[in-house]
Amino acid sequence: MEKITYKLEVFEGPLDLLLHLISINKLNIYDISVSVLIDQYMEHIRMMQEANAEIAVEFMRMASRLLYIKTAMLLPRHEEVEELKKELVGELIEYQLARQMAGKLAQQANFDQFSREETELPVDHTYQLSHDVQVLYDAYVSAAGKRRAKEPPKKERFEEIVARPVVSVTSKVYFVLRKLYVKPTVALEELFGAAESRSDAVATFLAVLELLKAKRVKLDDDSNLTFLNGGERQWRSKKSAEQ
Image 1 (cartoon, rainbow, N blue to C red):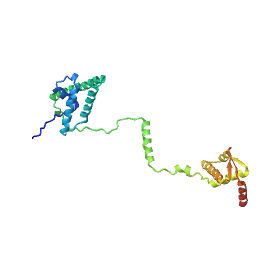
Image 2: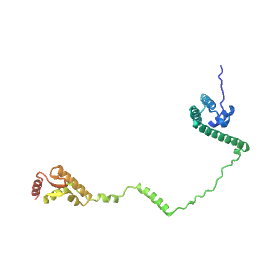
Image 3: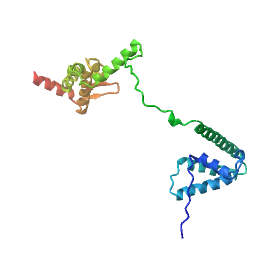
Image 4: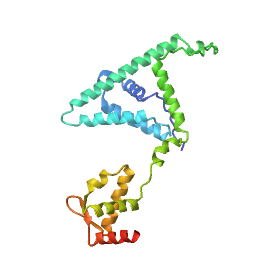
């Protein structure tokens, strides 16, 4: 048995297909029947799938749109349906008018005859724009800054950091003990007030922690340091041995 074949018409888009269905069903474009259109529209999509034709996204989007309108019509209150149908009718009328005008223009003119060979035009490479001086200066500074950012840093940038003397914690331990040897109680504020630099202050803080850890001194609630458990005697004995 010979297989039945059919040739599908080529439509430029879903509106073109809908106008074709309205025409063959002799429907009033101003009062279209969505129920009739959706069934025939989906049947045409099915035939396109069977023919392995490539279906554009616009066709599937229009199918979803028609199904939504048909579903909304089944609801008891469907004021939205009239707006949706009115919007669809407006698009169909606009597309129909555009297609009619395109047909008339195609009969009146052949656009292939309005062609000519490429003409080489003179090119003026002179820069015609004018800019404010500040704009040019800012552009230059920006470009120069990017270039300098790629260069290795100069040693002068590190001199301020590297040149600072490093204060040892051991020296500050002796400093704290000497203070306590002269005065039985020394306030932390007094110790840090004597610091000449940030490195000096950090070393003093670490020295106090070391003395507290070794239980040589104690710190009361008023932030005062004093010798602890014979710490003063150990310091005096060590000083005597050094002398």
